[in-house]
Image 1 (spheres, rainbow, N blue to C red):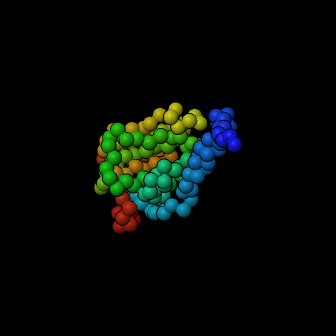
Image 2: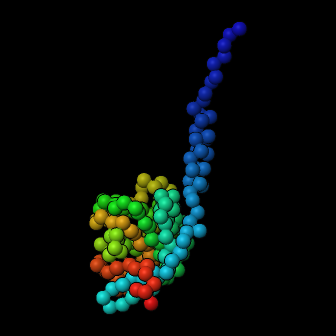
Length: 167
């Protein structure tokens, strides 16, 4: 009796690997059930009420606002980290369809930097630019592009989730 060795064809594995990796992308978590909270942005001149979805887990932060076609005018997403992120950490716009502003905030909610981000048309995340914070941060707030400027919100202003601050 002669032993038969199994024959593996690289050509046969390539479609299988493609299915496997496309399944990974399809398995991104849905953020439809994120907690929603009323908050406000506070400058020296005014208080601006906003509604924020709060992303606290790695999966929720990874998904972010991907594939959303619109964001309500006074709504956004707050990314919360338990450990401080370095100044060279940033966000990208892979699979994000709407232009956004991002504010990087410290533990107390003080804005340290604001960046404008454009949707990335590439189907490869590695081809998308990273919008680095430039400051260490614990929180990142994404809003529609132009929101911070139109509302007069600048570096040094603050995000509050305390109802007494926002009334």
